[in-house]
Amino acid sequence: MTRSERLVALRGMIDSAENIVIFTGAGVSTESGIPDFRSPGTGLWTKIKPVEFSEFVSSAETRKTSWERKFNGQDTMKNATPNRGHRAIAHLMDLGKASVVVTQNVDNLHQASGIADEKVLELHGNANFAKCLTCDERYELDDLEEQFRSEGEVQPCEICGGIIKTATISFGQALPQDVLMYAVYASEHCDLFIVVGSSLQVYPAASLPELAKRSGAQLAILNRDPTPLDVVADLVVNDEIGPTLGEVIGVN
Ligand code: ZN
Image (cartoon, rainbow, N blue to C red; front, side):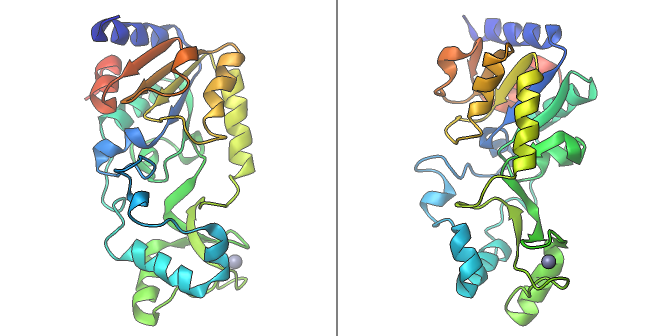
């Protein structure tokens, strides 16, 4: 199939679907200037060692280093805005074609593109705010940054004394079970599952497209590079995300 035939095929799949689940990974956000942390060689994590959850909890020094990184210019997410890919996905949600977006991203850009919080299932949490690890109280990063700059550390939770951490899921930290269960349910009940910008290397997230396929949905994969699930997909498009999805869905 030529590129344009593949785009026509994707458009056809979207047109005939009634309940689409969109699954997104880092590839949808690289066009917003957010580096793909997990890309070998080019990813940020090959240069900066990621913080393990157990270290964050047990070491005040690790917490300090971690907040320093967050507040001292290494936060590429702070000023990022949604790109054409995010807008195309938001449009599918507006049309009622897609019911949820399951995402591996923590950048909040799906919500920033206009999708309601409860329709974005964040498997790896959200880096735009912080939470108490004990009582779940929400803290805003601007407030914590002010505190960090004046006191040299982020103080424990005002309510329960627990440790405060960005609301992301770190290495070694369990995925949020309620979010995962909702994502599993949505994958089992959709009629089209579209992977957008994920290399499908991280489990259990990457098992969702397989689950959708086994449950009878069609599977389309739009990613710059090939993925391990290409062999079972009904359609694979290896291309840039924003321009491709924008063209297929008719969004600029
Ligand atoms: Zn607390």
